[in-house]
Image (cartoon, rainbow, N blue to C red):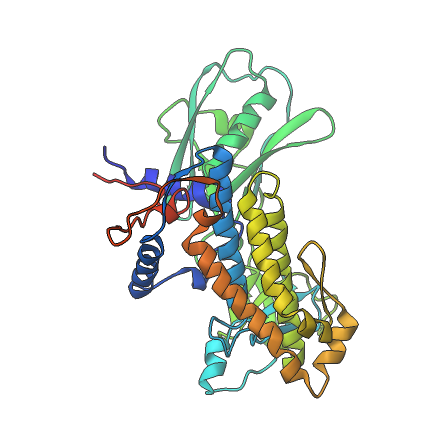
Length: 438
């Protein structure tokens, strides 16, 4: 049986939307040599491992995949705070904005800064307009039987230089609202860059609203999407009846001044000189009002990185706690994580980090601020970096063998000296989603 690209895409999309809680980062991509090393580690890990009978329930599979994804998310979150190098971990520079309501910013120029070729400047931004998406709002119709005859209808949507045809049936005695709701689900679930919803006018009438997910207009474009049934394959007339082609608000680009120079952007989020990722959130209240963006001090950056680290760690602990009633492996993992934090407890107390009974870590902001300004700061904060490195090693271990924490029964031990590798055991439910192609 042959699998085409669409089927495989659906498999991956289902996996990501069901289990992956965060978008992928650059730390989720690997070279061939890294993948080979991971495979060799799995083979070595399972060479002497017993054979197991695994729990095949849906809940067990969800747990196994979930624990791996949670470990991956924690690892990526830590890596994003300075990389995976033990010396650079938690060294990520943090950016600031003098007006968060107007402009938010993050620093992305680590590689440029590390090269030593340039200093990192600050910028002034005055926001004149925000980028917006396109809205089509249809005719408001009463919740009565539709005037369209029962038939198969179709219409075309053109978006991002691609054309999509939508076909649907109108049944006998269907109301306008019922058809609108069905079209709303049909368009939204197609995942072509549009959202559709049914809105009311407060008088019992409803309309179908189409909105683009993207913002702004590319050069030479007058709209993000168009709707038509002039040359469609089935019955026409539904576009004009529901008013799907009525442009209620056209898309527009963002306009702003960067250090006094006029600029435009098709989106409200963009990069500045490869150093900052900027998001415009509001318009300047008066002419000349600007937001300054730049780098925070090393002290402020470290404090922000610690907050981000502990937020991700606490989220991981809370996720694992949800499984404790049904899976003893989660209780064992929580105990192992407690063993890691206990090693650093005395050091954490010095910098205002308090380990709670449930395994999470809270921050005493006053004590942390005092510790950061202390003459012993470098020595005191080495413990939090060592803690982050310990978490990296632990999440790597979990990702290699998440089935170590799943419910299972030992079937047989391998004969000493005559064993053979079973590399797929660690990937049951969690890596090998399908196992053959034609």
